[in-house]
Length: 495
Ligand SMILES: *Cc1c(COP(=O)(O)O)cnc(C)c1O
Image (cartoon, rainbow, N blue to C red):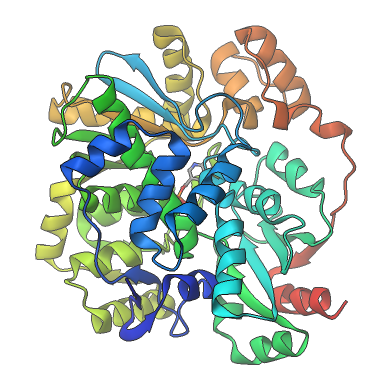
C-alpha cells in the first residue's frame, strides 16, 4: 500500500518513506491510498491476542514495508515500557460507560502509545530506505508530545531530537519533565509564544528549502514526531480496535455493534485514529469530539467554517490549547471525496486568511458520525469532583473535558444505552494542582506539594515516572523568541 499527499495525489511514497519524511514535500499530509478492512475472522483472532500482537496486526495492514514479526518485536519492546499488565486498560466505571486509559507509558500521557513505537518504526525505515544522513526530529509541543518524544528517541542511534515548547503554555510538571530530560541526542528549548506559534515555526522549517539545504550540509534530514507523521498516527488506530475487541471479549457487545468514543481533542490526531478504526470495521455510532474553551473544532463541526480568528485561552487542559488542528486536513481529505486540489486551496486559505469553509453536503456527512461539544474550566473541575464521588474514579483535566462533553451529549441526544468509551489521555498526577483543587477545594500552587496532597487525599500511589521530578538535574533552561527557532536548530546541528 502506498501513501499519497492530501494536497497532491500524484505524490506517492511507501510507508517507510512516509515515516522517514514525516510531511509531504508539498506541505500535505500522507494518507493511505486505501483503508484496509478487518474481517470477522480478523476480529476473532484479534480478540484473543495480547496488546502488542493486536498492535502489530493492525500496523501490518498499513505498513507493508515491515513484516508482522518486525512489528511485533517493536510493539513488544515499546509496550514493555508501560507499567501494569495492560498498556491500555478499558475500565468500566458505570453500566454502559468505559474509560480507555492510554497513560500507562513512560511519561503518563497518551502520546506514549505512539511515541514508544515511532522510534522503532523510524530507525527501521531509515535502514529500509537506505538513508545515511542523520534524522533530526523537530517537535513543537503543547506539553505531552515533547516529553513522550524525548523519552522515545533518547539515545536512539542515527537520530537527534529538538523540542520547542511555549514557555508559559505547559504545566509545571510538563516543563519539569522536559527540562530534566536525559540523553545525549536531545535538546529542549522554550519559546515566548503559544503552541500555534511553535507549531507554525516548525512547519515553516519543514517547508523551507534553504534551511533544509543547510541542515543537509551538516549531515541532517528532518522528520517529525508530531501527529502529522503517519508513524505517529498508525499506532493510535490500534487501541481503538483493541478496546472494541475488549468489549467483544467481555460480552458487552457483539461484532458489528456500535459504540461511542468521546475523545479530548487538540491537534485532532487521536480522534482521527478513531475514525480510521471505524473505516476498518470497528462499529461506531458517534465520535464525540471534545474541546476545552479553545473550541475552534466545536464551531467548525457546527457551522462548517474553520476560523482561527479568536482569542487563545490558557486552560487547565493545556494539551488541548490549540487553534490549528493539523489532522483535520486528513479527515476533510476523505470527506471532500479525496479532492487534493480543494484541500490545497483550503490549507492555503487557512494560512493566508486564517479560515476556510466546507460545503453543506460535507458538513452534513460529517455530522452523521461526529458529535461535538466543549467544556469550560468550571465544568472540568466539577466533573473531576463528581466522577470521584460517583464512580470512585480519579481523572485528569483532559479526560474530564471529554467526560463533561459526553454528559452533555447524553443529555442533548437521550443516547444513554450505546456503550460509550471516554478516552483518557493523561494520568491525574500530571496535573496535580488543578486536580487537587477540583477534589479538595484547596489551591496549592507548588506541583510537588500538590502531588503529595492528592496522593494522601485519594490514597492512590503516584505513578513512578512522576515521582521526585524536583530532585532530578535541570539540563535545559533556554528561552528564545519564536522568530529565532530556525537559528536555534542550525546552532544545534553545527555543534
Ligand atoms: C495531545 C493530547 C491531547 C490531544 O490529542 P490530539 O491527538 O492532539 O487531538 C489530549 N489530551 C492529552 C493529555 C494530550 O497529551
